[in-house]
Length: 102
Image: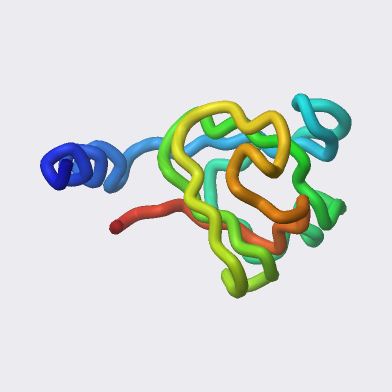
């Protein structure tokens, strides 16, 4: 399995990153697309909660608090219809960033 991880790292180091976050579950409400890191979800999105997410390219880390602090959630490409799909206890996400090395 370490060979698979190494291939993922090579594929995404300097690769594309694209993710859409949504105000409501099942991709409802306001949507915003990101291709770079976000130290404060509220400052950029105007909401404190992310209820669903579609990771189209790259691997991302969600953080519970702004400035990349608190509980972390590993986000691989795919559709997350509600926060429980990524293992969240609630919908509060304070920041997120692209995973470049792991």
